Image (cartoon, rainbow, N blue to C red; front, top):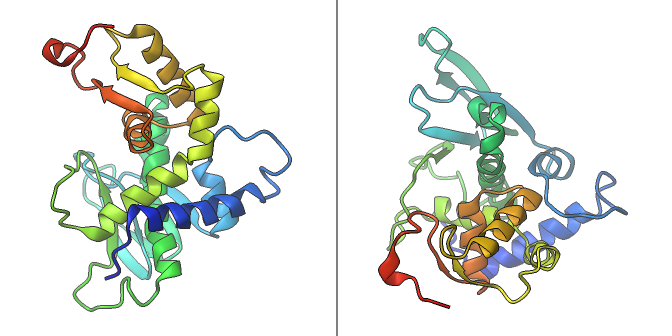
Length: 239
């Protein structure tokens, strides 16, 4: 399969976002975030549907490039068959029902759109070999491993990050929340003011704190982050 660098994926995302900006649904008005639903339906011609995808919540989203029937857990756990037509993105319905999960939902949609975009751009490299999986899953709590074991998933994750959080919109949000110089230490206990501004950025951009922290670190705008444990005192420097 084709292996793309971060620069390659940034270039692909830039093309997609420039086309998105020209859509009548968003053109000629202030843009503060990218709406995955508009990108999927109006630009890519895809359908987004919501279903319970797993009993334990381990699957957040899935898509396929071809028609295939999937057994999904029903309300009585007996299972039901859902037909994927190759142009549908399925998202866990719990993500739609929870306001707190909005950022995670948006990233999951973008992850599945990443698979569809890469298939569109490189049709000979995706889903053409008999042994390749026909369905792409976005799973909860997927570990970030090095060396990379699944290039398709890595590329879709990386592309999703850039699609949801284009550099220009991240920098615009930084300006609006007065963090133009970046964030030295992202810590809700020891740097509360910057942390609160950062949280405001996530709400404006429609993303999770984790997604924005990763993207800003990639862009060189966060030096250290302590989202998982703000009490790692030995690593926190005094101002």
